[in-house]
Image 1 (cartoon, rainbow, N blue to C red):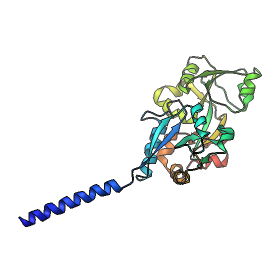
Image 2: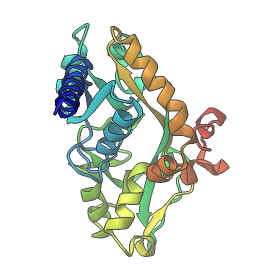
Image 3: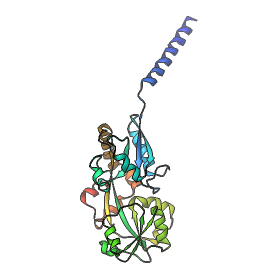
Length: 270
């Protein structure tokens, strides 16, 4: 009887100790992982979204320190938030060149992904991009709200036309229906488009040379050095991680010499 009481007592004490340890263990810090793209490739809220996958992966990599939450935020609201000196969270898939003066006030990670702005046309009327003069006279499917390097002066001069849609997928459909002659597509969108359009390679033509090649990074407010340090450590893992590189699906389009990518950009592919 005494032995049973001792066993029960020790069991109760062990259970109490575990409860106390659970209460004392710090809870994971919730970190919004912001994305301002509305296109399904990056937009938060689906298992197929790169942002949702990245949030889950970063959470797992932090070993209980952080809980990243994929969070959709319109570009205008993001820019208003960035005016605050200590906004919370992380922005993914960004480049400082796209944020003008406000970028200098943020803390940027190293680049972890290379991407490209592809020039797409129909196989029945292929267009090989050499420089922007290749686009003269074309009606180009673009995404509303996107800024394309050096494109607006050409539109104002009447050398080409810009035909906006709310997503790249709609532009791809417009191209298929011959409502535009050319469409700009991000290389990172192609894996999803191949899943959506089984016959894509039969009618879509991609110029061997993209219009632009660019990098993607994370950024935070400058008051989060510990979080930035964590992100930079993950950058090295992302670049070396073959499953992630296959998920991005961009390197095979950037590595060829005719892509115009720099050596630094090619080093983001391994």
